[in-house]
Length: 584
Image (tube, rainbow, N blue to C red; front, side, top):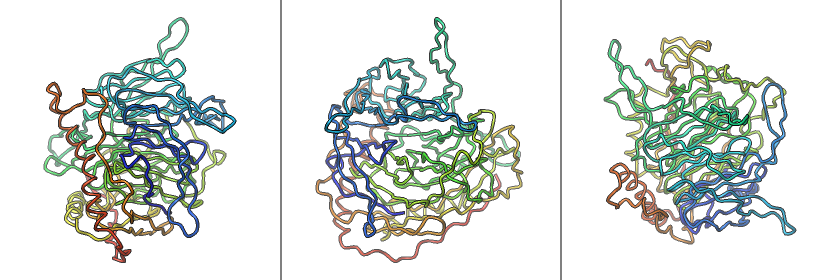
């Protein structure tokens, strides 16, 4: 594994707000506050190079405001192929590209072949949102799109007709993340009103034709938490409120639809404890409450993304949290770091920190799982390159049966709440404070812990294999490095203990050609935080967002001036926390 921040002018040094890999190639699309969509060719790093080679290809200039999200279609013209019991599609993938921007414009682009090569052209513009679009997702057959906006609504679009099929307006604040179930049954939205809503499709028949009709099945907002034995249960919020300093809460379904991964979690052990940032895993069998919690240091989780390839099991799943015949790998991005997990172990495969001066905005995997890319508001993107079979051997469907049935559970069920953590909760919070106190540290550390293996719970609660209910399991909190404590350096060290090979990731060593410029300007005057009609909550959120957009300019200047000719540090890494089980 090797990579780091690529020192090129991605979008004229303005914030890069989103990125996505083409599903059939290593072409990377990026977009941001300069209003353009740009395409880049990504090639493997040479033997002596630490970074993949990035080459500019072309750009699309059509939007008149900042572009917040771009997504290639996963399919275009589907032909069905039944392999074992799992329904797959052979696609002419990536023929369409959707982009959502400030002001509410959603543009569909189509790939055309010409004598001079392939080019993208605007196919249609979908207008129904009144304010900025923050996230969007294609349906599996590329016939529909769901989008989320600052106007507090989700809209389901018919791509072929270019029409608004349904508006979901139940949220009370910005919709910052949306996801489409790959099996076509659910759509999901996540809002800064501290709720995650899951909608189920109940088609309406009209003149013998079924029409999409999504109705809210579940509103996930709070969870019960017993404080002490024989004490009354109390409810706590599962998600951050509108003061979270990010425009995005990008959630995702696993490629097989077996579980839902939701960012922006904020979990309290009891009323007196501090909040723990987390991502939640919801089993498809029980979407009413989290099945697993993934604590992520002291910064909020803003985006998650699944690797599109399944991998063979390595025989390390001792805790039995997932009942899958293959491994699924996924990335979890906080404001300042990146965690890579798989479904066979409770500890992250790797932790990447200190790559950027400002908040991470989006993450994406290449279709062959060879690259992982992330974008940031500091105007740069980082790339991680994996060697062949470094993540594992690809799983072939012929090796086992895979089912898309809703009746089969994929997350190990439990009767009571079980916590699988790296240490007791007070120690976890103490570690977070300790990292905050080390702001003057001279080294950035990236840990690649390999497949450590799942931890068996010793809490006294018996983990059952019955498919009756899905309990709340809180997964591991890894000892991540706080980005604040690791910003003032030029080199990063990777600590390896498992199957991920040793590698070096480069941090920036030279001052960018163009200084990070002004913050993103909203296209719609309604978003002005100074307007007298704005609600108090909206003012708080906008104030936070403005601060994270303008902050990198000062910080980057200080860091770049103090980071010249800094040698690679040989300072030993801090001791790894040993996972233990906690009695709830």
